[in-house]
Length: 240
View 1 (tube, rainbow, N blue to C red):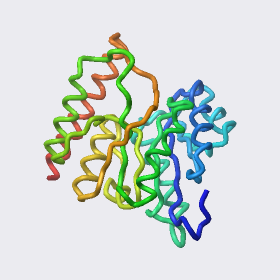
View 2 (cartoon, rainbow, N blue to C red):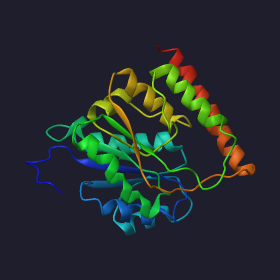
View 3 (cartoon, one colour):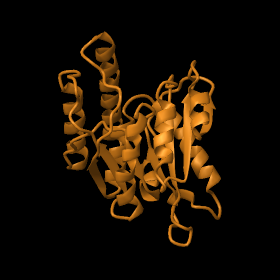
View 4 (cartoon, one colour):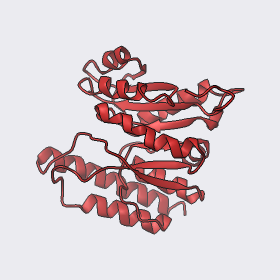
């Protein structure tokens, strides 16, 4: 960790987690191995397992929500805590925030690759570009829709339009204001940041996370994502 005189931006990891007791501990442990991360906050999104206990045992601060609100609202709860703690004489919106899924496990150590370009002020937001999936999920409709929609809104073709692993600086945080509730968090974030003329970069990583397959649960999950993405695109069309 750099001395305060050399590094003025605190790096804070926000980890939304729902029934993630099996993976959140390893994810937090991997994040703690990154010296540039100053604080790790796990937002337990109304889990009914030991997610909060496993996160705390690994060394994270835990915010526990009384009921499941979804990823966007969990992230909003974490961001509210970050801004409240850093208001007035602190880093404020100059804080750098890493958005980390709870199922990354040991591969979360790859977040250093996302943090560095933002910390060096090369870009405003980085997005993790995952390796090719080990197994086939759906038929590509969701990803194509997200990619084509983002190109329409931003003029940029993103390889990983739905990647939730991101790092944002203060300018990017101000651009999004708050995270979308429900599905569509990622595409909404990308549109809002790009509309402000900020710099976004996809960074290749070797992260691993739970993959959905071509089964009923997988199709239901992607169906919910698809409707969320469409909802966010429609909302952004109204605010062009």
